[in-house]
Image 1 (cartoon, rainbow, N blue to C red):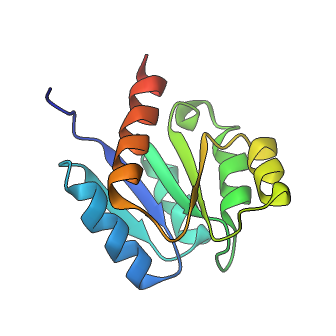
Image 2: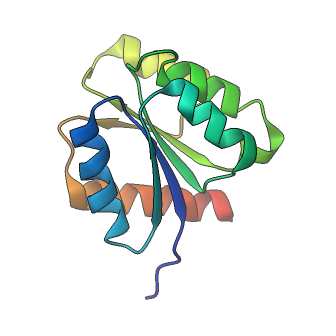
Length: 128
């Protein structure tokens, strides 16, 4: 099976996490765009429509929840899969993610294989 190459936006204020996600996701041939915070993510999204976004829940300037809720209100971006990255595995985080329309929650620490599968699955599902 040949995987399509997708463009994935990664927004996380931790350089090590951005690098790790880039390594994990580019293994499938995807183009990874990394930004350090919410403001930079919105800047990128003004001109680009990635196939998926991994947004850290806690970032300076604007958190992943806020970006997700804005993305879901823009027709052009609505088909992009949004995964929220979080270290918090609690009901409040899950409820908030649902509220803003996130497609999935990914918990840190990350498992590479699992993450690649979920990202690819979500993008494919959004494409149908």
